[in-house]
Image (tube, rainbow, N blue to C red; front, side, top):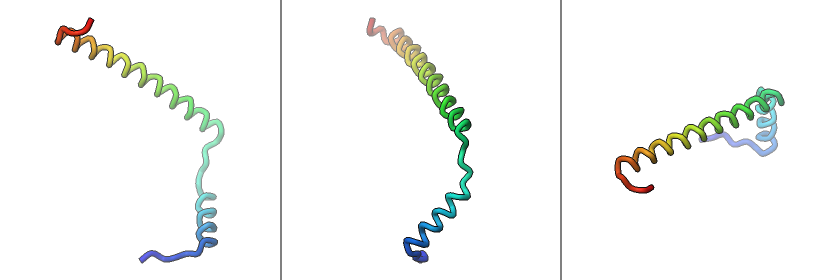
Amino acid sequence: MMAKTNPLEFFQQVRSETSKVTWPTRRETAITTVMVFVMVTFATVFFFLADMVLSYGVTLVLGIGS
C-alpha cells in the first residue's frame, strides 16, 4: 500500500526534486535544437530519395505508370 502525503508535503517534495535537476544552458538548448533540425532535414532528404528510387523500381518491374 502506498504511503499517503498531504498536498503541501507533496509540493515540497516536488520542489526539492526539481532543484536537483541539472537544467541545460541556453547555449546547450540552442545547439540541440539546431541539431534536431539538421537531422530532420537529412532524414527528409533520405526518405524522399528512397521513395523516388523505390517508385522508379516498382514502375520498371510492373511496367505501370508513366
